[in-house]
Image 1: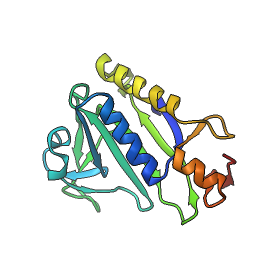
Image 2: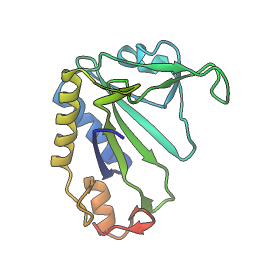
Image 3: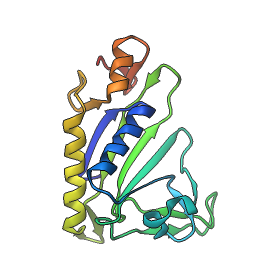
Image 4: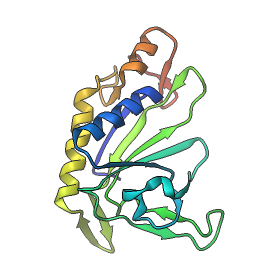
Length: 183
């Protein structure tokens, strides 16, 4: 379970704007999509477009936010067998990244994105802390996102401006745990 996380209803435009605003806060943000990759994992920071990428599950996509200044550890495990044989899987717990997990939904509905970062992970019986520079950046970024997005009627879930406007106009249903969440 990640130590830092938030939930937010984000339309594609909301997500694009949010990532742009995070990048504008401090230059050096690298954005990449897909849990599996082919190529050198260090390219996630330098040239993520050079990597071949795939998602792990149908109906879900993950966007990884890494920062050239704060993301020192990038860990990916080569998959020896199975449908992803020859691909490497990003280890979300050990990699210094913020993850945006989005579920695909039918038109007119939107489920919340889960935005999270692991700042600790377990090695056998020992809890390992990530470098303070990454932990501080991830924590500040998630707090900054939470401060910019208003809460829905379910206080733990935030909502982006376009998703909020569409929900208030009745053109979009905000869904969480199979229930409609009023904006």
